[in-house]
Length: 128
Image 1: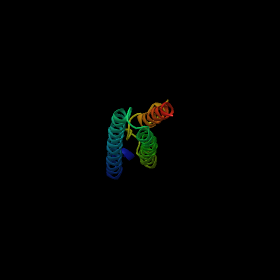
Image 2: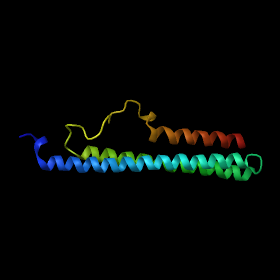
Image 3: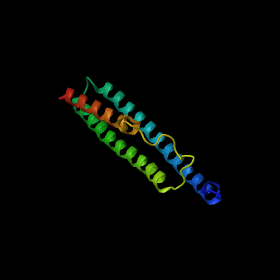
Image 4: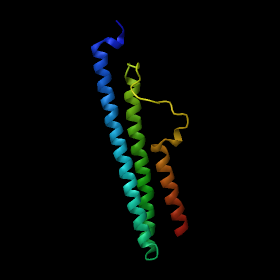
């Protein structure tokens, strides 16, 4: 009887899959929150564009800080998923799909915060 057939291993795999699914849901919610927050800041910036340079600078700095915070949060969530995957010994069938991405910078949790940070820095430079 192989290790795939043992009830303990199958039950453990279900638990780990459930934990990974939960972390994925949290990551998706955090990405949505980041996009909504950044959209709100961009609309606010458009409203104050001709009115107040001080408020524009504040919004821009807030956008940068939030982007850095979201980047850290996304990376933490991804690390939690990786730790769950690495600590689980059951690997056939795989717990998660393509775990070996070739270009990691293009993964949404890496790419989105960098684009937003670049956007806010460009706006900050345009204001000064």
